[in-house]
Image (tube, rainbow, N blue to C red; front, side, top):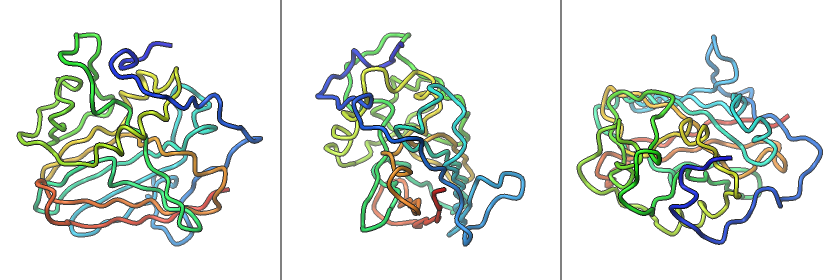
Length: 232
């Protein structure tokens, strides 16, 4: 199975194929207290400070078809009418489970990769963003998206650690194209894509999807989103 970045960055990968598997997995559905979209009941939505975030943990129909047996893919749509540009960084998303356990997303492309990349090693997102600027570190991977002009500060160790959790055949190119890109969402902008979280549905009965959204320079908080889900 082809991989866009397999030859670009190598680490001590923990193969998902070696993870112990149980019989089946749970579905992540909006909790009874969540506000759901009338025309899309799998999506729970919160709107605070002019930022609207909708999330679904039961919307994966891509390949591999058994992805939800190993990870928890969550489709996210963010609409920004806060009056400010907001950062979209993987390290600021989490699924909070019971007993303080936090499940983090796996970046679908490595933050550190060889440059320049050839034309084959680029991505065109399946969900077209509006008024979105890609993280400068990924400008060569997403050439169709204009880059944000300044570097976005982040915890580099988080990206190294999480990217090593992919197995040899993951992520697929389809998963990378469906993934939520990192960058800055301008006021009036919209962005959609999947976050691939560590497997939460096998061991939890409920989780809270959390997003810490800060303004474009990363200095001031714009809002914090919390959306409750239950696992059945």
